[in-house]
Length: 280
Image (tube, rainbow, N blue to C red; front, side, top):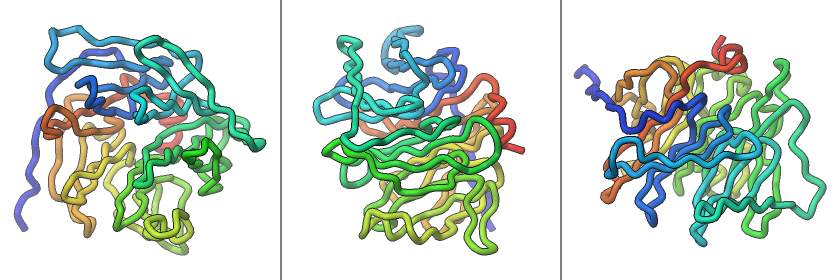
């Protein structure tokens, strides 16, 4: 068997993240953006600009993830709900679903991505205790919220494929005798029904899986928290490539740049108590 190719990431922006997450390329502004969950910030950085050009926006609550909208602003999943954010003015506009929807106590919104239908899917994360009482939600185009999954401890690795459905990781998810705390799952039925009823094991990672992204060839890149690397998996689950990062707590990856050929990777400076508990 041929050795797995390895590459080395280099520093792009020294942002002082407490818990950097959800890197996202803003193509209209040609900026790489990300959030600092524990720092309650959203950041933008021009990778072609001078060193230290990062711009930081303070947020009233911890963000878990965010996405771009057609209008050019950002949609944030804050710890207890969704809101629109205009980076040109700093204005926050809360989204108040019509139905009586609330994030369960002692949980917060965490990892999220836009699905192939343009809907934002965000997972919850339990902050106190071990009981998997968080959920996975979908914010629809009419701003209604649906619950896709229950009994979640800390949802991560969300990304979508038109053919293969939704990818997802949660240390509490098991199917019969399959799965571990380091498993990445896929829900093929999401591609046709928009539901998460039939999880299938995609891969048992060597380390704790954090955020993921799919590339144009259908390969999944997963940041391993605590391992200082991003692993590329082929559609059959075999490892195709590894990117080493000179920090331990890698959290997520995204593609960007004018040709979308540059990978940007976020990290955390220190693990939180919840991260340490989940890792163990």
